[in-house]
Image 1 (tube, rainbow, N blue to C red):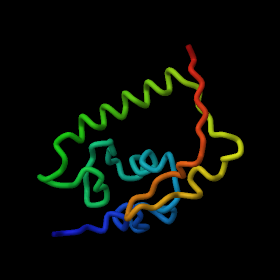
Image 2 (cartoon, rainbow, N blue to C red):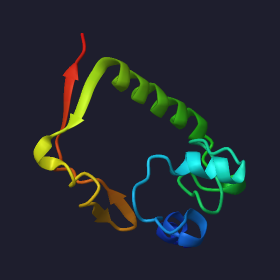
Image 3 (cartoon, rainbow, N blue to C red):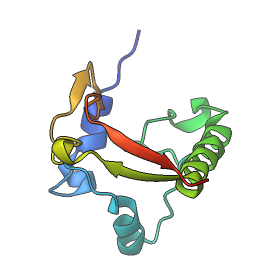
Image 4 (cartoon, rainbow, N blue to C red):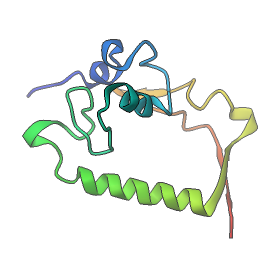
Length: 116
């Protein structure tokens, strides 16, 4: 069995900068401007291991990326969304860790209102 330290690869300050462990919604836009490299959901590299890397990378990663885009587009077009006032600051500040995976706090309420 072979294990890879994915957490280190995805939070390495030498790759992602001094704020590697903090949430930055524009991180990849900034990196594209600095490096000229295009980052997409199915991108793979030794620093982005969500779908593996090399010839053994996930063959369904392009389909998964397309499905995520459809879901996000539907949510943005169909619903008004906001974080519950009492939960502001807790959304990314109190992450839940399971092994090497971090999840946003599941107790934070995100309020949805159907636009139709």
